[in-house]
Image (tube, rainbow, N blue to C red):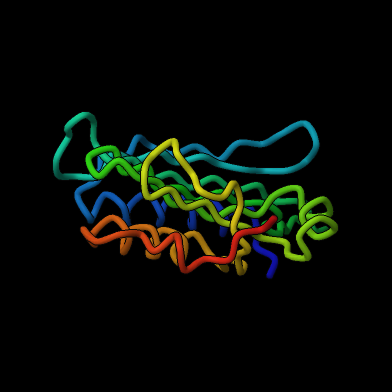
Length: 158
């Protein structure tokens, strides 16, 4: 799906508002224009709750490629949750598509660490995440569940 520059900017603002409405501390996001013609953004938000040793952080990063006629298509993303109080991490990535497609047979991959910094698998096979809202919702569901992330149920990409 292609979007205009104004639509991508509105979408970015919507993601920030969505996180703020959940009580997250979100700096004002900026839509960057790159010399290559791409546009992109990175949002990093501290989630409410325990801040020991530091608060949980959720991030959303996207790169959009020019698609002609002033429109853009999302080409890369990284949605991540680093839950410092629970000492764990969950992430959904789509980048370096030709390399991952050739190596793993999939375009998207995931990260899952039941213990932060000690993954049992570097990359899990993943399905595409179709929007930042979908990615953030999935990560917020992980954050709000005190149980295990379920990394053992995921398929490791070896």
